[in-house]
Image (cartoon, rainbow, N blue to C red; front, side, top):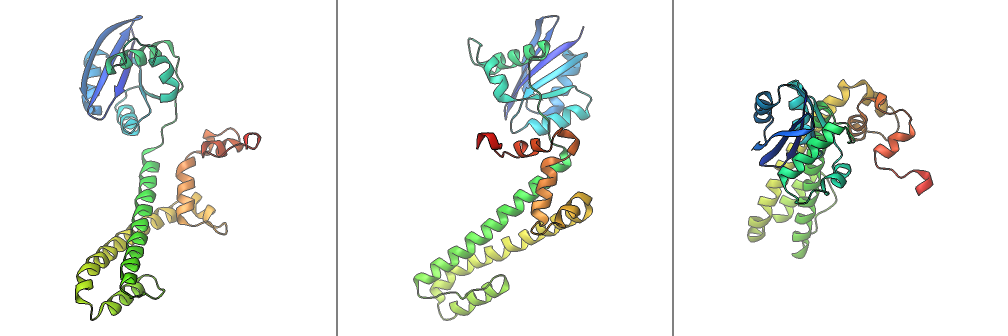
Length: 256
């Protein structure tokens, strides 16, 4: 007979419940690691039909690791599962795993599409670069504000011009230099790392035909093109073009 498994995943431990023939045959916990879970499933559920877990911070890692190992993993909408899991008398990880296993057995769940590994790498690259650019801007603004307090107004300029202007104004202000120069050094380092991530992002965009096509549109650059392509992934996932807006979080016209 086939087994139906529910996984209640947390950062440290994962509660596991296995059902077969309408009843629970095993329940326990293990470390939140796909390899540990795969070993446990091979021991207690060799004929697993569905392995269900909710969306969460580890869901992408779990889904790809389990599916690559041949485990029939299914990621379901956490908000949809919450209504069923809240019916348990006691809200515990073990009872949540039991509820997920029951949902897997009866098929009452809403499966969500998990993004591909390569797409998530590109999205991570975009997010990391954006964060470094933001830090550079915050550091430059902080330097401008601190020096303005002492009557040192930095002229307009970006990049190397900004750094040269700061050093020129600090000439003869040794006490202030000991405070500002470490910030300037951090600004230089962050700017260099942001440039490195930008080069990686440009290389990915040049290698993608879809990104090159999008960048032919006026006003669409590398960041916008790669972000859109990784958000959509496969156009076949959408039956109608109007569904793309909803997928990206836009409000439909009738609800505006």
